[in-house]
Figure (cartoon, rainbow, N blue to C red):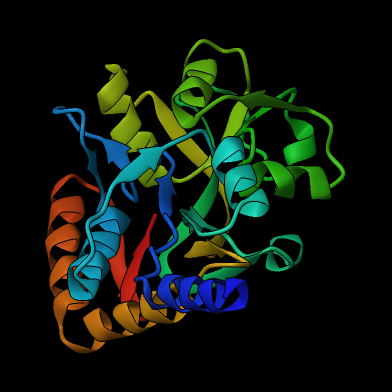
Length: 256
């Protein structure tokens, strides 16, 4: 009788609907990919891509905004976490799956407009500002440089440059332009002295991510049905109107 009861209970629980694993979606405050808008919401080019993907999947979307180092660590040590927008590396490939690219970003050496530095050699600068957890911080380390200063976020890094606490930062022109306006820094306060490279960025998913195939299918669907092109056209017009050089590459935007 006891065996029969156990069998009945086992069949009962097996037939219950299985709850979906909770998925966390995390981004970092780095315009124009993602940023906090005037209403306290999350806006941005890649934010619109992720929203369109969720619309296709028919799923609600809640986006968290965390510092880069914390966002990356969260995805590396937890299941069912999505982060954007991040650069692929061999080290990250061990722990993350990728969707995209969702954007291309150019890297520059940026200084104050009154700076006498005009070198394209990073070792010539007294100090270079980079953001903790950002791929550019890792890249500077890999060049064997020790003359860098870590900031908590891109806003703080730009403030360091404005106040002369660093001689240069490694960043992109679009972010510098947008954050200068956000922080009330006068237009023309900065200039670039050297182009470094253009880097594709992706949506990163935890190695154990139950809905990976569904997310991949959603990205391909909005690419093929024209929704991604509509997002591209909107942001291309918006960014060029704000004086930010942008163009389309590999179905997504490449932004200076």
